[in-house]
Image 1: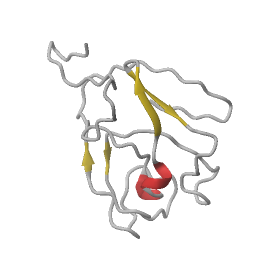
Image 2: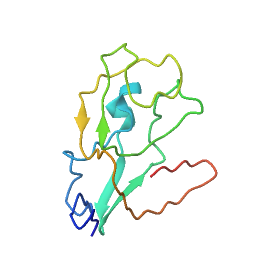
Image 3: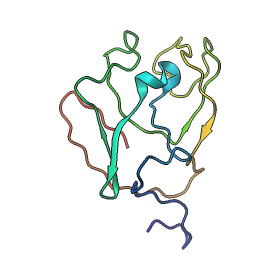
Length: 131
């Protein structure tokens, strides 16, 4: 059980019927594309979250990000400015503009501390994994 000086801070074993959207956002940087184009493909069970990218999944930031990417990820925080602004987290190039405004979302966003996780990935030469 994760602890900090003997106190439980946060734990999620992803055992419910659905992702806890008060903690996790099932979209990857949706402000640079859209929620529809960045929605995670996932299942919950066996005390874990399984992210996948089905063969037919569309591109994230189609035509703008080079190389083209298909993504499946969850985030614990997200924000952006209004459509047309340059305010958004993790810009991947200069001059990006917000395509879909996102309301501020602060799920599990600790300010320091200790993080522990168990993870595994099936990757190929074309894969990118981040934890």
